[in-house]
Length: 427
Image 1 (cartoon, rainbow, N blue to C red):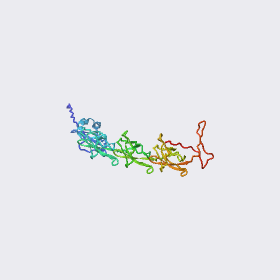
Image 2: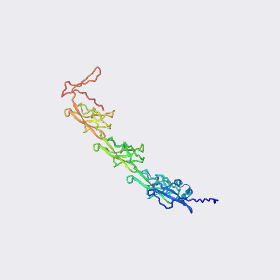
Image 3: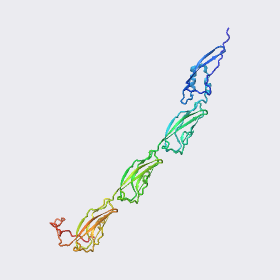
Image 4: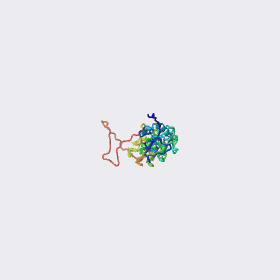
């Protein structure tokens, strides 16, 4: 009779030894033979470990994946592997920086504490993780407050257009590194949309006058200041008092412009934000003040030598294209004649015989007068001839219909003439 059969069941595990160094690129898989024997006989089985390549050349096998491989190839012999493997792999894996490498664009003007990137870091063992920049940076930092630009920094695209930094995250045993890049965005200078431009200006203007309203934009929305560069004693750029946000180009008050000396002025307008500037050009073309026009001269008038009262000889027709105030005089002055405003009208000038004068046809049969009319800047002169006549006969002419009549010699004579007897004592 056989003895009762007694089974002795012992659990063994297949382990990765601590301190080993696996490398997928050198040995991607390991095959091993497991032999189990009692005092008499033995049995063998085969077990294969397929390494999973990690981009950082570190073994990063998920625990469940390892269990599935072991169960597939060794079945019931490794029932106790779960707890054994878990105790062995603790501390074997570095944290994983899931969100790097990455990059961000940043305006070079930013100098306040600014979040650039939120790190996504995981650790398979759940260890406490610390992250730093390696090497350290004077401009950037990694801290528990997510990665940010250190306040008060001074960035300059023209000097350093980008920054690349290594972010190192570590647990109590190992670390991992990811790269982060900051691409600076260059601050753009303001754009002067309304220049170049030009404006025409009458040379007589001498009061504070707006010549041009600047249209300036800045893509970053920076505060903008505009000036003339170089400064000018005649013109200036300043804020428009009505809006206090738009700049204008002004003629300064009290200035003295002269077309004959400087017919045009070109100035450089410089607009800047906190970092860069832009320049546009503005030209002022002066319009020359035109002298008055004496439309009714030259002319001549005949006057009886017997007249000795203040007598209007000619009404001046004078125009000025700018509408300036006009004054008219005789130049040179005369003791017999004068130019003055016609009473009652007070807007038109007339040429007068001065009252109390004595004319003598025999000694001076004619007088040539120069009439000068001027505005504030320029003048014009025309001639008026006064001929003294001896009255030989007074014509008494009547027209039954009351029409205007005109009398003359026919044919003309170089010695005699028929003319109206001037009204006297008009003044």
